[in-house]
Image (cartoon, rainbow, N blue to C red; front, side, top):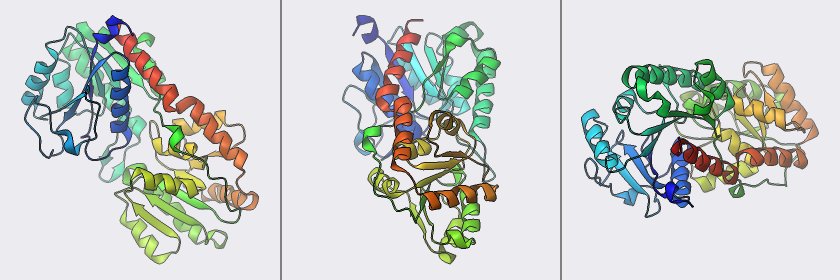
Length: 390
């Protein structure tokens, strides 16, 4: 561990409040902080106060973390007011004592926070593509479109505010489609760093005992994961005599009313709601098939399914294409959820042939090789070392 690395100060900014428990972006930030802290960086986490905090102090004072996820003692977590001026002065007092700081911020940070952050011209910025979920009159906007929308706004902002300092901005992409899009906008290759999301695979396992004459189908997430497409599909499946015995499980909050109505009129539809990690792993362990109808930049739900060796039926998003190209034994199906005939054929064949354990094992091993925590976090460390040296 070099002296140079010890002098690097990293500020990781979350797009949402880290409160009680968390998944997705907050989990990534939490793991980045822990790992970088162990590898020579002085790390702080900044939480803009979008949501009311219990027992917090104002501005730059360290917030009471008794109701927040615990970090190591060496990692400070700050809750700064979302108010533009309070955030500016609070953040400024944190970083002015350091000659060189690295600020990591997901594109999901709201624009007034962006306007403030890019006034700190001496800092190095790493712009991540986490935390991108938007709604438009109850319609979920595909996350690749959100990425493009935020990115264009971000680039316009920086060309206006800090054209002389654009060399100090790096882009962290979580899939290669994003990298290609950045290239198309003229961003230099040495400022684009692909490091995917990850999962701790040792916490998941494949259940070897599976019935060949019954399928348990799982969907993870609420409205923001396009659960409506899954509900419409299930309505058709349950009207088909071949699939009346199929069991459907739903995990996640913000489920549509149509799903609750369906569960009242049809058998074997189980809505679990928001569950903790232990419960989620249990449900994953006895499931056979995962539905992924959402257009995500990187589906962690799909990754959880792969970690359990689940057969995956989903739309044409990046991680499904990646896995379909890598898994030789099959088990990854890319479909249009409106194409009932195609989905029906897939499920009919799974019922007839059963789900082979070796196929499940192959799905897990391919995903683990690319997306396990032990593989990805060293790449995150190397990314921060790389930008710190430039």
